[in-house]
Amino acid sequence: MKSPYNAGYSLLVFASQAATACIIPLVGFVFGGTDARTYWPLILVFEIVRGGFFAAAFLYIARTAVLPRRYVIGFNLLASSAQCGLALLFYALPIDWLAVNNGEKSLSLLEIWIQSPLVWWGMGATFLVAHAALIQRYRTA
Image 1: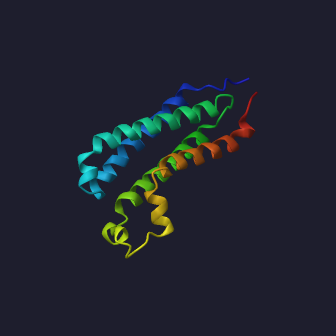
Image 2: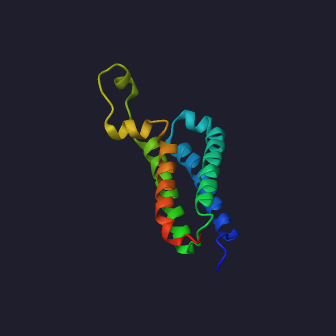
Image 3: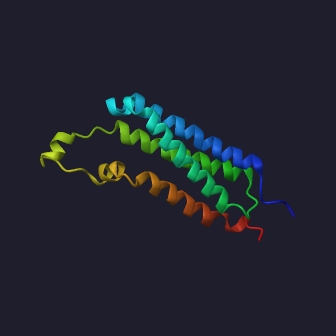
């Protein structure tokens, strides 16, 4: 029987999350305001930690499964693309905060969702739950 652990997959998962952790502050630097340009090192550290948690959880969930390389690459590419897309929406979506704070305008559901501080962790958790459900057919024990 084939061993479920594959060191190449671990490297692949952590590398995709590290690349995402570098892209998100870059998106903030290009599209964001002064805060994103000033605090990009903190954003980078936060994204590295969040990506490390995601990669470790992804590998922990898959510890007893023999996953095809296509699944690992495709799933992590999808998760990374979603995270980068969310960062692009977060930084590029213009919101008139003065009008919102004065009560002249209210945020749409999309704007509320994008600006939520829990959306990053919620997106990661959603992908991990989907991962746990999808790999059931690859379990070895």
